[in-house]
Amino acid sequence: MKKGSVGVSPENFLPVDIPSTWKAMEALYDSGKARAIGVSNFSTKKLGNLLDLARVPPAVNQVECHPSWRQAKLREFCKSKGVHLSAYFPLGSPGWFKSDVLKNPILNLVAERLGKSPAQVALRWGLQMGHSVLPKSTNEGRIRENLDVFDWSIPDDLFAKFFDIEQARLLNVSFFAHETLSPYKSVEELWDGEV
Ligand code: A2P
Image 1 (cartoon, helix red, strand yellow):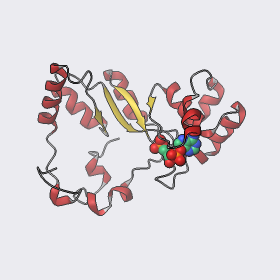
Image 2: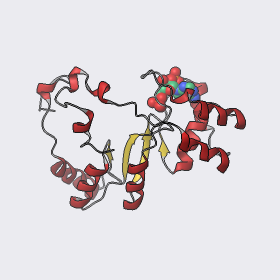
Image 3: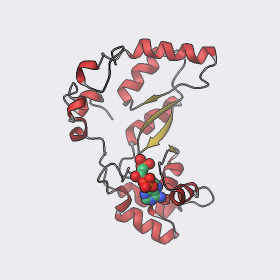
Image 4: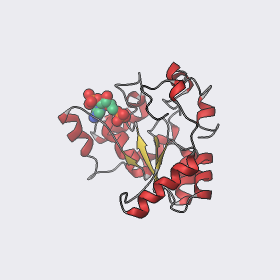
């Protein structure tokens, strides 16, 4: 954002200078003010470019990830480079989007078989995929429910069923077509045409 600007509108945007931003983050890391530095919403292409120039590689890339958008290509790339993948919207953010992630029939079938809620199974699936998961809730009962995912697991035969879930991300072109983000003509431009 331009210095002193107020509000998220296109005229307030500056072009993103990732190399110099990353240098500043490395300086924070060197100073001990940050114990780890990372990125969010980086495509394989953007992450590859950053790894080429980084002295301190990003510890983590935080991206949308849930059973209906499992980030197959990006996950493999992160794994090969030792960058941890952290999942936001691990429940499909049902309050924000008209999302069907928790309504998916495969997820619900597994939940029923295991006697768990669809949300718990979505989170446990993420952990078993090797992500960390960042669910949000304003409700104490659901926060407790979302924490209760560490002393049980999805057996292999049920886990395999998740690979049949049709893939679609929530943050799609129509979301970014919102007028405040209009400098980006498309989500492909925003994400370099990569996922
Ligand atoms: P609430 O705050 O009323 O619990 P995400 O973490 O994927 O962005 O999703 C956040 C949304 O999911 C919030 O709207 C939250 O609503 C809802 N949510 C959180 N935990 C659960 C749960 N266990 N079951 C159903 N919905 C949940």
